[in-house]
Image 1 (tube, rainbow, N blue to C red):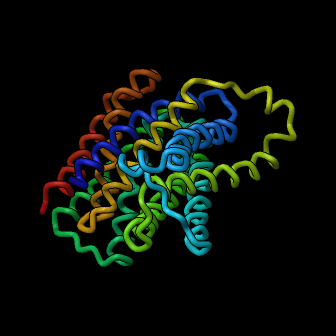
Image 2 (cartoon, rainbow, N blue to C red):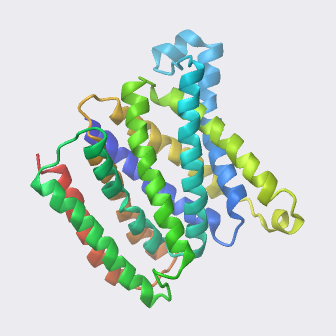
Length: 300
């Protein structure tokens, strides 16, 4: 069941990435990020309010929110800091790079998670899982060669380093999620509520320095419907992902890989919508990533 929940998370993440590309194109990145997190928070806060004013109804429908001590709050705040840094880097990169380049690089995230799962959680991959993960990495390298045809030099472009940094931080957060869900026994809605709230506070500090004082930047910001859609779709994806992690048998290395099947939506549909170049050539490494994910899923 946790694998199916992971696939649901991947579906919502794929749609989330398409909306995110629409939201940041020709737009101010930081206020877009704040808007997406805020809209996601308001979505979750609706259920939080329901649990306060109609506790019996909320509890009967699974909307129960846990009370946290200060130490647990500090653990959730750390997750918010990690993901805020990852999102700032990712949104900046997405603004300046094609989605068909950004998304496959993000697909290397399972490799970092894979190593962390072995070292930290002692998860044991088999031979086919090893092959699957290295096939994913090799496919991302192929994407880098295609990217050069679009004028993107992978060794000199700072946005490439930004998306690599975002990928590493995102993978670290994924490993941390297992600790929060399984070891601290946080339920999905509680983690989502406090995580979003702390992330908003962090982003407000960043915007106070980088955006609010500058009139030109404030005028350059364009509100789009996709900003709200990004926040809601991300919360839906996170909910299914956290629900999957609640299963004691769930392996973080496999869940991380399953989530990367979102690239089907991003590369195929996204390439058509945003009319990006070399779509057919990108199908070759895309197939490599899909085969890698298949080997991970069905190698037990």
